[in-house]
Length: 115
Length: 511
Image 1: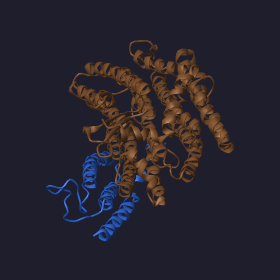
Image 2 (image 1 turned 180 degrees about the vertical axis):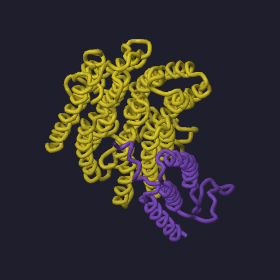
Image 3 (image 1 turned 90 degrees about the vertical axis):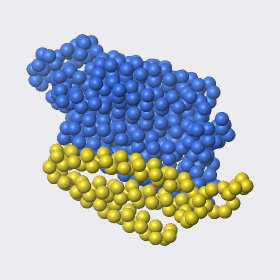
Image 4 (image 1 turned 90 degrees about the horizontal axis):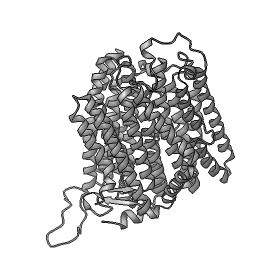
């Protein structure tokens, strides 16, 4: 499972970098979303993927005795996904504004604020 | 629970909500914001006093004991940053009263847009900034970064002009990249140590077997915080976005936001990533020299006051990182002192630029002139922060450069000392350029239209002048009486260089 996830994460990172390096601003935003997803999946995988073992203490026992899934990375990812969702919503509105003011979908044309 | 530690986070939220409910009434918003910001200054000074008398203050969110819950920690360094951010908040609150209105600066439509969200967003941003300063948990720091970033995105694009939208686009893109790097670093750290509490990390990192992995992770954090702090070669977003919003927003961004990045760099590279100082801090050292030099060269080719000042932010960031990279108690104290001085001076220069635009009609220094005759007081108010930025004794910039350079001399880094002093000279050159063009030379055109020319203390400009005088007085008091400020910086450096104090307080002092 970890092996498959690692390949998926690698694929997402390379797709993200490819998209970010494109000149189209829409593809840039898609690339940034890929990057965020790749980072989230990375945290998920780094927290060890353990299947079907909820982190619950058995009745009568005071400690967790066997290997269980770690709930914390999932909580972190949940936070990161929610934040990423809000930011993506903002960037989509922003690129619509950029397109309205520049008129082309080309990040090379965004030179006005650099001069 | 220690309420004073979380007050600097909670209070701006409350103030933001109050200003949000008053959004139909501009006057009330202004009054509420000024009073609230003044209260915030008192809260932060109280926090500072308590930190100075009782040492590091810790509160655990939800009373979960230290490595499990989120710790909110106020050490001397955090307290210094919170005090400065609240002083800046007060200055900007007063400045905004004049600068954000008056028909000749902004059209009615733009004023309306600003009415919608300016004050609430500003306060939410302070919440994020103070949260980032006070948190003791790495993932929590990520969340505070996002809070301040999202508010800053909107503040930057509030007017919706073409320049602003383009500037915001660049700013948003690079900051999302930085956040992704941060998250990746956090993920790797968690998998190595199983904790994200900074004090706990500081305990567990030296026990990690695979130390080369720790160094790799530290580079993720260097890139992520480096983008936010605008270090070489990650600074290009700054001069292409900071000059676009209204000047009061530029000033607070210039003063505080990059310094949040510097704060985080200093925090993680004095507390967590100190296992391979010879490697990591040498990288930071060379980055700092390049940051100083490239920043000041960038400024030399510019004629827009705001862009000159933006490039100077980069160059000054270099000095702070320089202090961190030298990694001796004196150097860290110098870096902390530098941050204290820099935020006040840099924001003040932006505020002066706003006033120059108001009375001279343009940010482009080629188009204004003769202000030394028409506004001699403004000329003096420009000279104080400008000479301080360049490091002329006895102003505050001299002392901050003195401490950093002295630390470098003790380590016999003569080449870097040479770079630092040369950059000081070039800074003086650019400040002289602004002085010659905007103040000294004759006005290239006739005096601008009559309604533009109002005295500094006239009704429409008075609220822009007050914060400038306030910040200039702080600069002068740091300059002529550096001893107490240095002692506080020294204390902060002592705590930063001895992480065991921090670790014991956070992990041992569960309440």
